[in-house]
Image 1 (cartoon, rainbow, N blue to C red):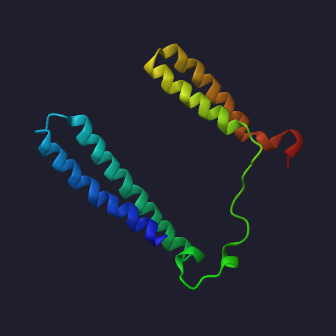
Image 2: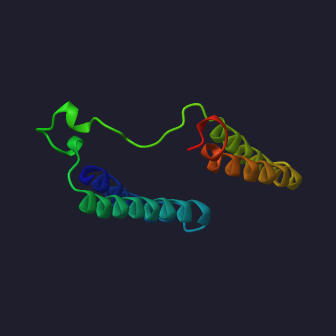
Image 3: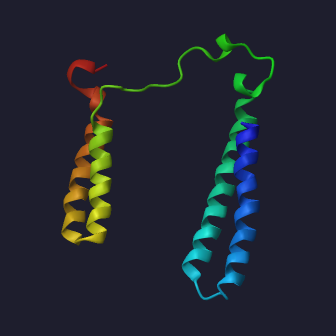
Amino acid sequence: MRVESWIFGAGTFFFVPVAIVYGFLTHWTEWVGILGILLVGGLAGMIGAYLGFTGKRVGMRPEDRADAEIHEGAGEQGHFSPWSWWPMVLGLACAGGFLGLAVGFWITAVAAGLAIVALVGWVFEYSRGDHAH
């Protein structure tokens, strides 16, 4: 994860000076852009720090080594449910929430209810039905 942490860490050292240059170019009158670019730099720094700490804790992965073989990366990569419809329902609820912010707040309330239902359904998907453990 060393490469990933350096890429995101370099984003901090890129976006902070860009925000300062942007501030000078707009004569410090356009604060939304300055703050947005600074926040992107801060987010890149946080992701880079997280990946750096995780890389030290986990150690070298096969994709980090030049002499690694393909079979070293084989095995279980995590738990995924390819037949689940709940992520799509949650994504539609989030899209509806943003639509409600633009059009009318009553849409946001409906989308929040749908988001709660989708989140509960996704969390408890394996607690009932055919795939219960």
